[in-house]
Length: 290
Image (cartoon, rainbow, N blue to C red; front, side, top):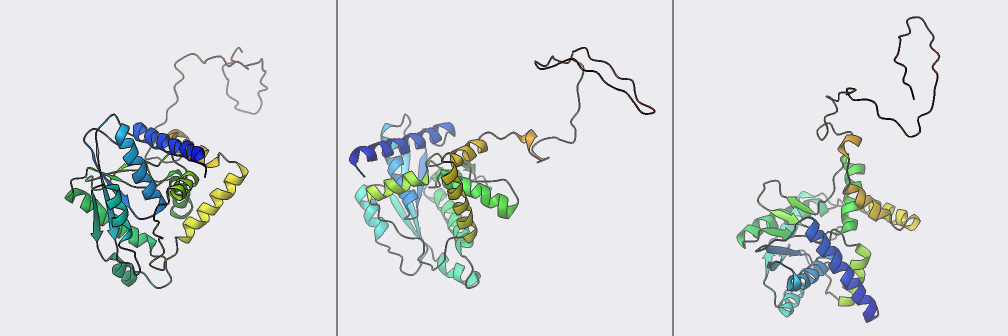
C-alpha cells in the first residue's frame, strides 16, 4: 500500500474510533483501560489506535495491555511480550490453563469457541479489578457487531448484538468497543501494513463457529449487491423504534388508548368523499367535511 493511501486509512480508523469514543463516552478523565490483546489483527489495531489517540486526547487516561495465555499447544508465548516490550507499554500476561477445561467439557468434533470465550471473559473481568482498571477495551468492530445481531436473530430468537459500551451483569466492569465504527476490511489493510505479529486462533484445533461463518458469508454476499448494506444495518441498530417492534417489555402495547379530544387535523391530500350506507342495523356516523 502506498504511504499516502495508508495515511488516509489510518486517519479514517482514528476518526471512526474517536467518534465512537465520543458518542458513547467510552473514555473519561482518569480512566485506566485494560486493553485485551488476543494476538489477532483487531486487538493489535485497537491498541495502536488507542495509543495514538492518547497523545492528543482532551482527557488523560492510562492504557494497560493484557493477554491471556490459555495454554493451547503450540502457542508462541514469546510473541506478545516481545512486541509489547518494544512499545514500552505496561502489560500483563495472565497464565491460565483453560484449554484443558475446554477439551474436557466439549465433546470431540464440537466447536470450543463458546466455552473458551466464556472462561476467558470471566478471568479477564476479574483481573481488571486486580490491576485497578475501571474499563475493559475489546477489539470488536462494526462487522462483528452486525454479524452478532443476525446470529442472535437466526439462532437465538432474540434481537441483540454487541453494544459499543456495556455494563457487565454483575455491574463490576464497563466494557467498551472503540472499533465499533470501524470496518473489518480497513482493519485488515491496516494490520497488513503495520505487519503486526499475528497469532492465529486455530491452535486448539477448533474451527470458528459454523453459524457465524454462515452469517458472515450472507452479509458479504449482501454487500456485493449493495456496498452500504452493513452501514445501513448498523445505522438501523442506532435508530430503534420500540413502538414499531413487538416487545411488550419495551413498549406498553396492552394499555394503548385512543385520544380524539382534539380536532382532527387536516390531511394535505384529503378530498371529497361520499359514503353508501347499507345493511340492517347500520350505525349513524359523523360526516366529516373534507
